[in-house]
Amino acid sequence: MQKQRGFTLIELLIAITLMAVLAGLSWRGLDSLMRSRDITQAQVDKTAVLQTVLAQWQADLNAVQPLPSLNEAGVNWDGRTLRLTRRATAWRADGADAGLWVVAWTLRNNQWLRWQSAPVQTRATLQQAWIQAERWGQNPSNDDAAFETGLLPLDAWQLTYFRGNAWTNPLSSAGNSDTNAPSSSAPALTPQTTATGPGALPDAIRLQIDLPANTGVRGRLTLDWVRPNFSNTKT
Image 1 (cartoon, rainbow, N blue to C red):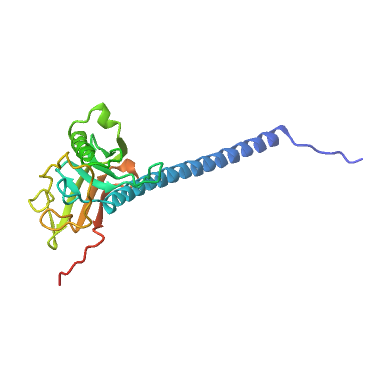
Image 2 (image 1 turned 180 degrees about the horizontal axis):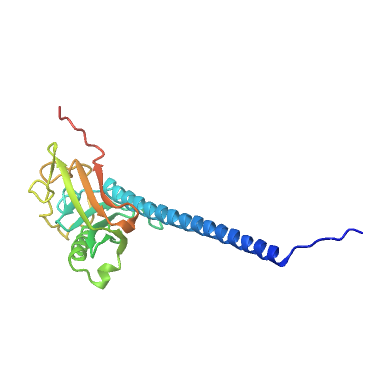
């Protein structure tokens, strides 16, 4: 009868040690893979937020609505806050046009913020919202801050207007048109489809933002918005 030979204690210990080492290496590889996946997903999420914010910026400018007697250009930049009047995209419950929004963008405590008024349909309420947006950009109250949305961290931002076939400072006399206040006696808003003259909507607006590392895309980013009906005749 043949005697059956089993494993010795030393052989079992060696086998268990090898299995433990292989399991440890496998876990480290799996952990590294999961960490890489989480980092990649976080980067994708941050990039998606940036793209969404810039899409909102473009949408606001695309919907700019100049108004006589308030802000001929439809936009006003005071060096700190950009205010604009734009068409509202929401509709009232009865299907009627919701009117206009006053929108403002500013940088406060290294946070890019957007402010939006409730829909307005009369000059009086538009003037009130326009003034409220200016106050929000300078020293917001709790009521003003209730209409703001935090967007993303920024180190700095800068705007440049394209006028007269050249990029110029928005604060120059050719672009600052917020000089006339509307009369509250006028019952309704009267939008104008085009604006001409020194206070007209610029042909293009260049946005430059300096992004910190935690936004997913570090460094300076430049985005140009071009007025839809702009035609450059420069030769």
